Length: 311
Length: 309
Image 1 (cartoon, rainbow over the protein chains, first blue to last red):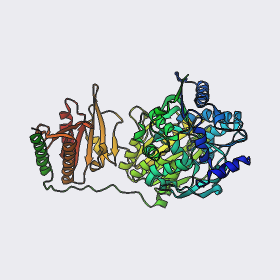
Image 2: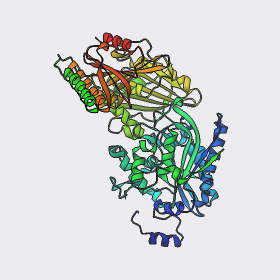
Image 3: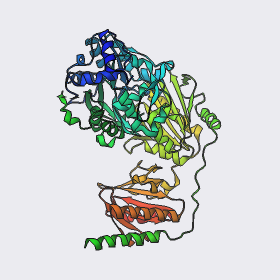
Image 4: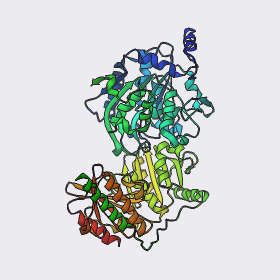
């Protein structure tokens, strides 16, 4: 996939193929070149009631993406879009272990408004998939927004050449390689091992196999995934943030409001800002440093002159 | 001037270190018994969740078990901390009673000390505690408790689940039986000014130093001043002194360190910009360290020495 020449990519595009066998990496540079790279939307108030939080999450998501120039910058008519939230846990949205369903639903709605033909939402969770999809509220929200949200089929994980520094190949969910747009929607939360789960860490939900082996060199393996799955867009949910006992969480006492949604085309910059939501510096997180060293993006997110919206 | 200051610093370090390496009689540091074989442990766990349980819940599928090799599949990076505490077996079962859905996780940590360490790593003094097992806390939708060598985590969803969690937790506690007290060392050390529910047992790098492992850490608060009492558990007095020597070496290199005979035989006081100020002394097979000592920390140190004799 990574070896696919750009000429082939353009030729295939010219033929009008919607579901390209190219993978999402090729779109990254096109999107990044045409507008702001980072957008941060923040709510001045912290609504307590669920309707208020829902409205806040939707507005923040719309504003963050508008700050980049709108979803039409990333999604074209006829696109098939893979949306990847964190659905890894049997947790309710308030427990902030999984992506806020209103953020996910808003992204889906914006994709369709931009002309997407089909939006797919899925993840390879740690906890039992059926329960996690339902409990997180994401399955219901995604389906209401018109997306196809399904539990991954074990038979569709295929060994795929990644050409990574430590992962020459790994088992990847094949369908995600068949779409032509990829949007990563992580939640910002504490992680016992790597300090923070953000966008790059969320990419682990696209692969299968013995993922525990990643922990032998977590920094490099995550960055190998980030180098392969270069999202067209990252939308980071920082409305509720799990500040301790992540990634599983569960205790509402560990959840704090940050009332923020970040959108960006530079996955390193998005994660670097996300680290600050957890009281960390980007330099504190090994995989962010490694991704920066490999020039996948910048830790100095301020250098991108982020668009900021205070609502 | 600088030369003499540096020489003096290293001289003090050398003298302190030399004293700590003097031969001592060894004491038993035997480890706690481990769990049984995997099958036996799994069958034992099943007896805890056997029907009847309060609310007569029905199992939503067969219970699942995880061991050290595949815990990651269940809890991703959360598994690493459990493995650090020598996790043995996890029983996971989903239950349903009326509209309430429950997830039961029982972690067999192999021994009571590691179970305490894992439980304590996930709790904070500000939580809402209740009297189940050795210690328990709850919040909306969760109830976690510690008992014997088990760390039990219950999650509930839907109407009535919180009440049911507590009832089921009490039944599980009765069935588990075994030890219902904290590790003995925590019962020995001073209670006065101790921050409730602040006790920790750290297997890896207490204060960032591998040579201090394992250690108990407890917070003490007087007015606005909060100190941490760290008790590094060595296998014998000689090793405790070696650990103190390592601490001395570290502070000599990163800040300053000097003997503090008024605090006890072989005691030191030290500081650097990272840890701040510490006082420390070896007592038997323990290295006692107070981080950010309050004005009367000498009282806490001496009382701890006395209590650990």
